[in-house]
Image (cartoon, rainbow, N blue to C red; front, top):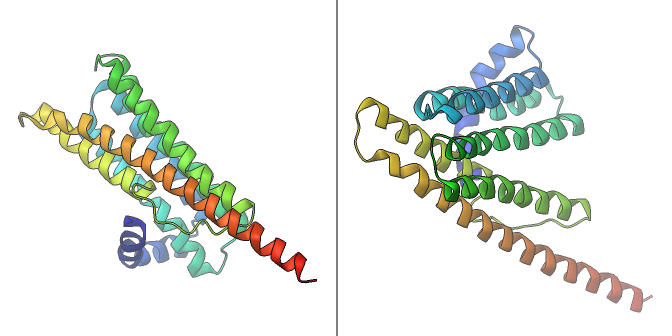
Length: 219
């Protein structure tokens, strides 16, 4: 849902920065790797210690590399299967680090096995949501569905909630409840999105099989 509009906006905003990186000789793959490394470091260094505000600041600074590297590749005319593969694979690594960091917090000083389990569920369901689309496309289906909570939504909801929850350490009262609420929203939304994609793949596969059978009968 957010992908369509947010990507278009940030692509325009980040185009000059992408052009600057190209001029100084930075490659899109390097941006992808550095961005993922920054997200992983921010999530696994800060979140398990309950430093949600500063962790979110670090992650946000690096998460935009997901848009910058693609922008650079388009400007260079180098869009490739390898670049798409690398970008998609490292996105999964970054997402795992974010929810893994939250799970570590709740398994330790956060002291909530339920929220630890929900963070793990968000991690796992997000991976499966991505896998269903990739697998559907691999068998030749368009998987034409806009899910309720896709990657952009998962990141925005989770990071905004983490950042605001982190303000509790600066004396802002009541904000610590936002992160648990966000985890439940992301978890339930991811489950709904998974269902949407499974139903879509089932429908598209049935239509494709029917078209093949009909074509065979007309020969």
